[in-house]
Image (cartoon, rainbow, N blue to C red):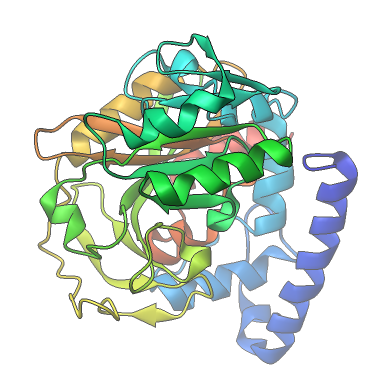
Length: 336
């Protein structure tokens, strides 16, 4: 039911009620207009105007985005395959996180895609000549950092046994080395760049980007797990404010006290955008993808994961205003 018609209709009803309640509490919203959703979209028009400071009729409500855009241009029957971390390196062909262990359908594969006995994994991790710490994560269903663990071999081995017992597909990967400037936001977590791309008429467009960072002391970057996000402008500089998962605004990280200066430039931002635009061309059945990307001190871009279903829009609009404004003719055409 994850991507089913029924789930999306239920979602539309639920967020519609939430939007109406919000509108009644904020009666000024009834004076607003919305190009795509004339009745219910006015609440989104006002909410994101308050957050971003940009007044516009071209905001997309959550219900419209998920059911009238994503659901129309993405083939959800393939989404679980594209999101499966055990297959992602083969799909991307390059710029993926290496797989040290790939567990699929009860079979263990090593870094060279050879079948190995599960009993040898513990020693492989303990005697790894390069890596002191590892990441183990389910191959699908890791939203919010669920079933993601980071640590040395002794920490990872029990989770290897547990995930096998639960018959999950999962992977073990090395830790990514991030650029020093990205690490400044929160040294304990891998701070990734979320980039949304839209493909139509033979061209891939960069829609919107932001930095995601972990919670104080956290090891993962998920905003829903207590982290923060900061908007990235088209020139690679930051917005001067960030949001948590409840869209509460802040101007500094609670752990590092690092402020978000507008003149800060995300390292190798253009290179990251170029990589995901190139890779999007491999996903011919999916018009919209949200990528989590990192880069090291030498400019090597790594795609941590790609999100081809239920990838949120709210934070993008809260930072940048109506991010689909220049694509409105296309969005109207797929809904005519």
